[in-house]
Length: 161
Image 1 (cartoon, helix red, strand yellow):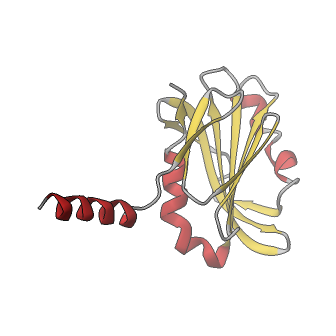
Image 2: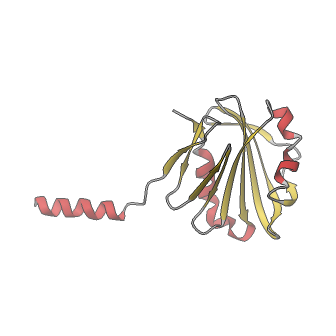
């Protein structure tokens, strides 16, 4: 009986999905739950996350701006490093909260590496009093397959413990 229970527990452990890794942003004082298999590259205050198939890219960049007003006017210039022909769903990002932090959010369409892409943006006032830009890019045709994962990843951004 004891052997059967141990065998069942071992099989359950093998069948369980791999756990997410909690990664802390080096200066923004936030953490994010990164799904198993995703790649994380940290360069100074910038963090780039990509899914195993390289369909989805999350770019987390700390802005030099001290408040939302200063960063919003500079967004398209910063995003030009990643995307072109950006067409936002809303003329200005909408105010929201992200796990208790003040945030602005918008979504739209753009060209990334010459391909049609969905682009999302969340601008977060972090606990370290820094502005964190979170840019999400995914090829438009592949967005439906990744929508839930993207939303879960954004929702996982929270103040560090």
